[in-house]
Image: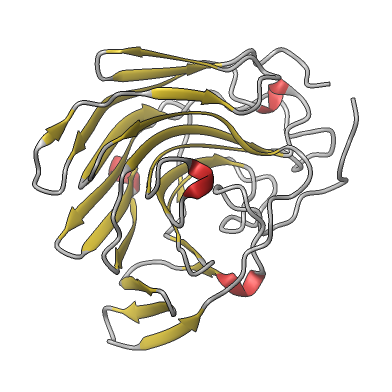
Length: 275
């Protein structure tokens, strides 16, 4: 087994890029992000304070195994809502050859474009295990957080909610007028949310498993994951029928996707070793 890096950057994000610290905004509640071609405006909805944020260049993908592992996408001319349920799985058996090295992200998400590599932004309620630019503790357990990564090169993190194996989650993204609301809903444990505006046009709905610094498949959850009750609608509120297309980006852990009705099941060989 070959190791490409001793540790991972604390600023790795679930979109697979490494961001400068100044480009990451860790927020709680009462905020709106307005995105334009010239940059972002962060608005405190409680006080009315506005902070103008210029374009911020994110770094390229890092050179070791940090990217989407498998995803399935449904493309539509316009999307106005996506909701997905899933259950917090059993924690991975490994955190990497150095404790805290590996992280995993499980999410539904919305983008523009027809391919993840062509997108300019992503809305994503993310269930994570380990660190990211939003969660700095490399030994963090399961956390549920609303993320928004903009075309301005900035990443916004909502409130971080601690969740446990067996908790039921829902990731929702809803358009109303010119604005989107991203919600990571953990029921009685709380909701992490963002409101963003700027006329974002969404055409791609994703279900994704992502790994960062994965050298052993035991760094992935042990059990298969079912993303259930998937609901999509267009910007007029008309129901859309998902037409899932799967892409395996890293085959080392034998990932696979199966679809039955409104449920999407993602599986992998968590006992296999990446070499």
